Image 1 (tube, helix red, strand yellow):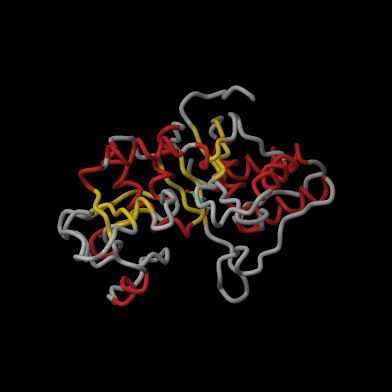
Image 2 (cartoon, rainbow, N blue to C red):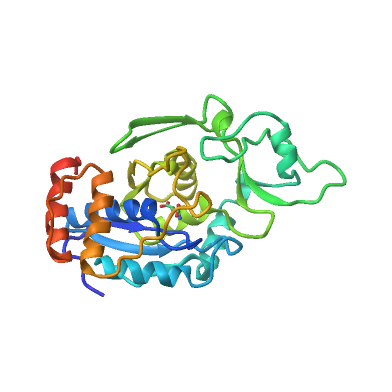
Length: 297
Ligand code: GLU
């Protein structure tokens, strides 16, 4: 473990180990790492394996090994969400007055035709808000969002600028504990960012629309809101976000030159003008300079 050189800035990369690291996740890793280094800050890796059904055995180790070969290592011990469930349970207890059991299944929520939040979550019509329908048993636990008028969350994103979302109509009450018994991503990420003292979240723009829900949770829990920077997401020729499901290829550099080439590709996607580098050390030096020149710190 190395010691952070500047107190204050704490950033993180938080991969879900659903498969090996691909070009899209490398862009997010690179951006968060460069921003931390450009601020002389601390950079952390957190393995987001809270959805144990989707986590692939061995994938986290593979991701950590690849990041290390690319020159990116966590400044503190890597944390694993699957080993921190007590923290999510404790936060959930503090939210008890805002939570209710929900007996609806996916089909019923989709049938309500309120549509989907931009991140794909179905907008919940509030069916179980005032109690479960008789004969129904609870499936998930949902957090009540404020009614229209008091539900507006506005924040500043370092790339997107001012972002505003109306939680009541654009998200609806959202799940904190899922029907399969796992804590929801939204809760885990807020608890972890707060517990780890994260001050800067740099991640893919596919999570921009989740951010207002996370800010709402931060306010309920009385924890600070970090600064946000959402970087563009890599898409394939069909316009789909790169992921294991869309057939993204794993990043597997054979040697140092291959590692530099993979990093330069990712930097190019972020429109960073990094000159050719003969070694990883040189790449990182040049890339931090390019990041400082192109991104408002
Ligand atoms: N685990 C999420 C992912 O791999 C990222 C979560 C975050 O950065 O907040 O897409």
